[in-house]
Length: 347
Image 1: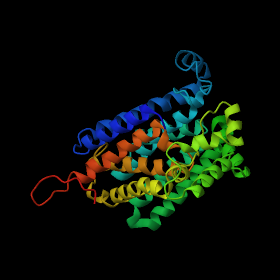
Image 2 (image 1 turned 120 degrees about the vertical axis):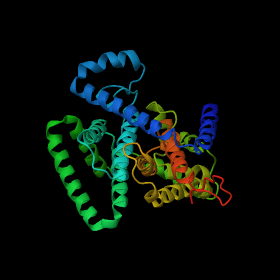
Image 3 (image 1 turned 90 degrees about the horizontal axis):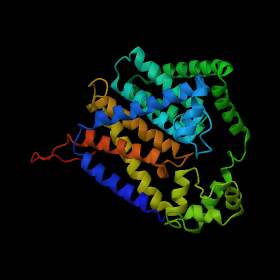
């Protein structure tokens, strides 16, 4: 992609992952920092929504050059999409961690989770919200799979109550109503919010070279040669992505490239979930909490890949890499060979 920064960042991340996979001591601090970071952004989002006058000086001081930083939806970031990603990772890690730890959550733990969810609603971003709910739901059902019928019934009741609560809340909170309205608009839009044409471009590239694709970074160049690209360029978007990582990988790297990404990601996630029973307890930020926080983060990332560009955004792929190496550190470090040496093998 002719981007030296990405090359350096990915290289450093790979080295750090390898170095960190042999230790566990850094994990609780890392998860605490992630949750605290998200809590800060949730506080800012809610505060700017409650007191709009607070946002103007923040915008002028920190985000004056960003036209996307317009109101409480972007919180303390330059774009509401960025804010939604920070809030989503905080919500997923916190909720899934509590689910995996399996102890009864305290009132303040529940309040923090609700604050994350409410702030995420205020951003009006649909993709991260849906991916977060799916990640938390999958973790809840899997952790309680031994009593699946009762768990599914409880989950159904929770969903119904949540829908009722959101409907009532939307009557009084315009920000929540705006999010629901965006879902309604999407259901009535046959073009998928204009993304169907982006998907068509990806499929055209894939059909021309299905095995190895057209080359990493070639999608945006291909779109730029089309009338669709000219339209987006006139709107100020100089580089377009598919808004579906799997389609973009098929277009740029073919079946081989998609498999090289998807197979390791799926194997790691499934193995972590299967071995989670060996890591129970430990309390808040213990092994079980941290493992399930990272399992939830991986599910969120892989689900969001259907509607966003998380593989190409540092706000998404850096936490994902962290969650991957956490799984290796927790699930792999306790496996030993016959000679007594540590052998980090997730299988």
